[in-house]
Picture 1: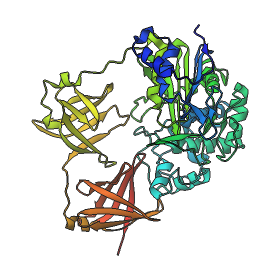
Picture 2: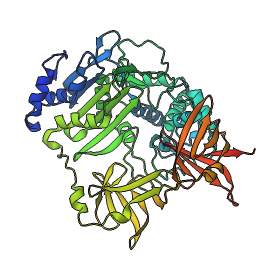
Picture 3: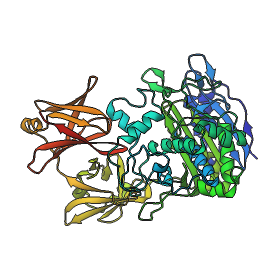
Picture 4: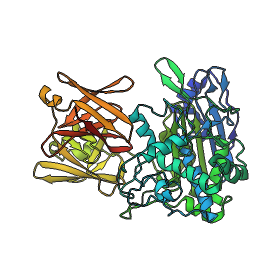
Length: 552
């Protein structure tokens, strides 16, 4: 068994080591050396970094830390350093629900309104399993808060704020089960359900029923961001000339907010394997995948992505909150567990976790081979596909261009399989199927996007005149976001003003549609006689939020 558990110390020779390792074939390198190479960028006393823990069949085989836990006080990271795990937290919230299901208190088919009647009745039940598998259609409360001008990094939200925001939403993003759309709202509601169904605070329930029984001594919820936690790292964003502190300032938890170590995460991964918490039925429930309403399985279970990595069965999740980054993965057939926790925002979670896994999976992992996009495209005329397309539900634009002989949707290369069908990037299960008649292409279906009927329609680009912009000027109000937008025109420029004094520039996309920065898409809606009556805003996990035009 490989044994590589030792403390890390900073060494000037590290850069020389990295050059030596880079010159050796990967299969000839020791896995520990390969992981050191991955984290060389952060292995310095002037940078935050990461802790990594790897076990095989429950036995530790690798445990190291890189970079600093606290740059202000010169404290290095260590394998026992406490980090925040971001969305890795979701599996612990699911576990709390599953324990109450086993207790007979809840069922996965319970309508969330049974426990949280503050939510509106949308006409279809929002089951606990729909919340858990991101298929409920609920808007993400954090995105709504951002639209209101008080985003998650601007205000210390708590669960009362979450319930207040969700209770005001007049619509869902989509009919429950219609598609998969990642939403923190479901997991915050699940935390509330645990508290109400058990009669004790969610954090207390988690400690008594999960952390303490498993011996996860350094794990707790960040239910009070001001509480002193000994051994916790600070979190940092990379800036142009160094680093700045970026730690969460909210009380909200369940969607994120788990404080833990790579050692405790190794214990947790074993519990998800051997049933030491709740038995075999608990393990089964945690890995119960959700499905769309048409029966399509979507690979997301109890806060876990269940699928395949490099030809190896995998159960993984990533995490990102403020300056913290995390990855937790299991590869059951190899008995392998990988935990990575970081306090540097410039660590790519899934990609870095995957590189660690590859180092220890060895020949079991299939080589990562990039398709020959240019070679496959050589026999196709790609010009008919070029142009601007739009999702009719969200208004999201998608531009397809041909560069260097390759069709690209944004930055993603497309692999032509036929005149109508293109593979999206390297994902063999994700395809665009075009509607084409002769050289005319009117749109395409996005198959593999975990949606029952996601499509994009071709639209013309639009350069509005000053008179056309003037038609859009006005004041628009959304009670869902409790905010007012004032749209102004100055010559050929359109802006949106919002309290207290934020001005957003708008870029024309297609007729009556604009990009507003930060991923926002604004569409102006007209009534039967062509008069602009409302404004529609989409932002990531919020679809088509309506702002009504105020007369006068």
